[in-house]
Structures are given as structure tokens and as C-alpha cells.
Amino acid sequence: MLEFEKGFESVNKTFRIPVHIVEQLEMLAGKYNTSMNKIVVQCLEYALENISDSDSDPTDTNS
Image (tube, rainbow, N blue to C red; front, side, top):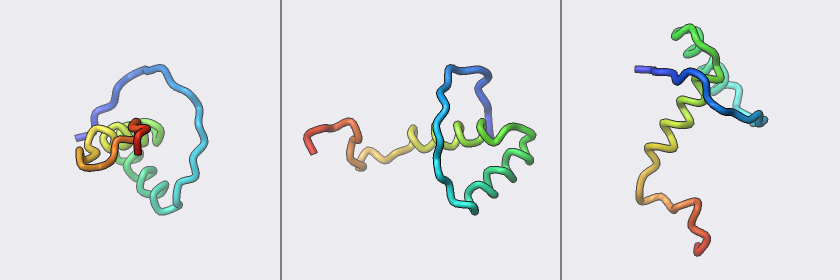
């Protein structure tokens, strides 16, 4: 179930995203009657929270 946080501090960044992913994000935004930005933020938060422990730590500078 999609749940959206209201209001948060943010910054502007530019990313290149494949067209097929943008189309899927747009469909989700329409389905849930919300902005594509909120969909992207939630997808990124979910991905960051669910990265496998076996993946290397991106903050580890000893690699």
C-alpha cells in the first residue's frame, strides 16, 4: 500500500531515467492521484530501506 509523507525538506536534482520507468511512474501517480515526485521518493525510500545486508556498504571507504 502506498503511503505518502506530507511536507519534507528537499533539494532539486536532475536524473536521467529510462522512458519505460517514467511511464510506469506516471501510471502509478495517476492510479493513486498523486505526484510523480511522491511516487519516486517512496520508491527510493523503499529501495534504500530494503538493500540486502550482503550488499557492500556505500559509506565504507575501506573497499
